[in-house]
Image (cartoon, rainbow, N blue to C red; front, side, top):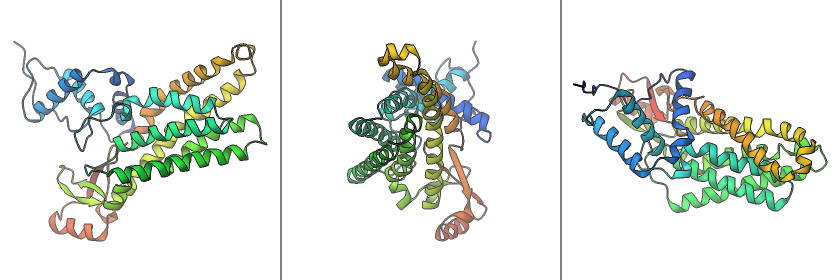
Length: 322
C-alpha cells in the first residue's frame, strides 16, 4: 500500500535554496522552460487544483513528491503569485525565449531603414508592455488610462531612441550600427518598466514579515524591486544582442549568405534564441524573487508603524516582480 504524501512540504517557497545563485538558477530554468506554454488549460487547471488542495491540507490520491513539485512549477509558470489570476500567455516568463528570439532576431536583421526600426521597436515595446504588466508586483489593479499612458510613453521613448541612434551611426562602421537595437532596448527598459509599474512607485507594493504577515505597502520597496528588474532585463538582452552581431558580421561576408541572403533572419533568430535559453533564467536569478530590505530603509512613517505593531521585525520581504 502506497504511503500518503506528507502535507508538511513547504510549497510556498521554491524547491531549491533561494539564498544562493545556483538555487535561484535551477528555479528559473524550470519556471522559464518554453515547453510550459504548450500546456493545455486542463493541465494548468489540474496543477492549480493539486496546489490549492495541498495548501488546504488535502493530498490528491497517489500523488508523489516529484509530481507535487511539477504541479507547483506549472502553477507558478501560469498563475500570478500575488493575485492568483491566470497570466496572459505571451506575458508569462515561459514565453520569453520564443517571443524574444523572434522579435530580437528581426530587430537586429531589419535595422537599416526607418519604417523597419519603427515597426520592430513598436512590436518589441508592445510585447514588453504585456510582460511588464503581467509580471508586476502586488495585487492592486491598474486602470486602463494608466496602462495606456505608460504604453504610449514607453513605446515612443524606445522608437525615438532607436531612430536617434540610427541617425548617429550612419557614418560609422556597419558593425557599430548592429548594436543600435541593443542600445534602444536598454534605454527602453529604463522607460518601459517604471512606467508600466508606475502605480507601485506611487502607492507602494505589499511588504510582509518572514512569516508572510502583511505589514503595509512601501514605495521604497517598489523602487528597489523595479531597479532590480530593470538591471535583470538589460543583462538578459545583452548576450542575445551582443554576440550575434559579431557572428553575423562575419557570416555575411561568406559565400553562403551572399548566395542565400534570406537565410540571414532565420540564422539571427536561432543565434538569439540559443543565447536567451541561458540568459533568461540566469538573469532572472541575479536577485531573489522574494526580495528583502531592512526596516530602517523604509519610509519613516512605515518604520514607526512596524516598530509599534511588530517590534521584533528587522527585515521586510516583498515580491519584486520579473
